[in-house]
Length: 374
Ligand SMILES: Nc1nc2c(c(=O)[nH]1)N[C@H]1C(S)=C(S)[C@@H](COP(=O)(O)O)O[C@H]1N2
Ligand SMILES: [Mo]
Image 1 (cartoon, rainbow, N blue to C red):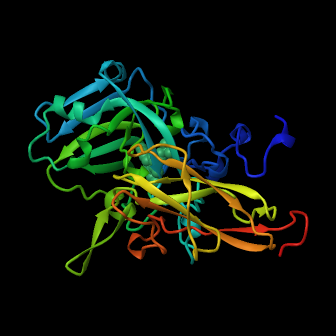
Image 2 (cartoon, protein in one colour):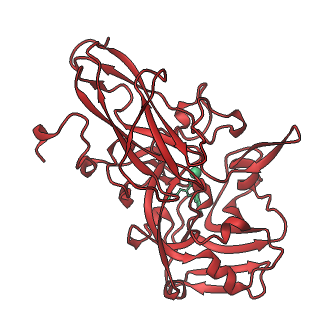
């Protein structure tokens, strides 16, 4: 690659030299290099990895997926049987609910994710609803509990006394939507082990915790499931009649992130710098994106690179004529969804250490890169 032909701020081909960032070595928690990702689909090797427990080794030949609980005909499927069913492919962005946690002040417990606990891929599999139809889902089933093969001791209080599995309950209304997949491929190839091989759930539009990896059980329930992950860990305070009620996280909230420039990058004065990033929303579409280069005083519309596609991110860009005046500048990106909901200015405390979708300041220097910082 000819480095001299690269324009300042141009990200073309840069992902070739990129890798993941370790946030925790074991269990594996690695962040995508958000500033390096230029493609619409995140290459599978650069897709973030979020795992609570050691990665289970499952074998295709002995794999079984059980569908039972509040159904008329419980059954089990082998890997080959699942693969022989009619399949669909869908693009979906996964974001960990703790993404951007490092931006919270004061600092909080948990993996210190920066901007890269979010990625976008194409997933192929069988719609969950086809399996639920085959099993004869009971009229009064209200949630579908998805369980993985991984086990261990969880970290968030209150904690059960021994090892548990990873399990997440999805409301029936979402579980029967056509986009929810029991997936066995990612970006056109069999799922990598880190991402749930041989089979995982993909719940587009919801935070990543719903997309259960190493899926072995689909269990319909008649009462709201109060399991550890839905209550202790990935939960927040919803308010009902003035009282806080512990509720499970669900849809991703509208968010945008700046990929370039990076925090504390030095940019040349009086030149066009291509600011770029991505924006996404849960169960709606991102329709507007604006950028501020003066800490939020003024905003200018940026340009989308990708069309609207429900549940997938849209990359965007903005050509900034950097100031002649050297100094420190604060960049912000602000997305708006189809319902007019705008990214908030501040983190909502009801979400604790999750749902960090407020405007994230990216501070940069304008000046001579070799010179003293202004
Ligand atoms: N079985 C299992 N599924 C899981 C997890 C897990 O630890 N175990 N982590 C969840 C969380 S919190 C996220 S954000 C996504 C991340 O998916 P990825 O590792 O493929 O990016 O997987 C979800 N599914
Ligand atoms: Mo997550």
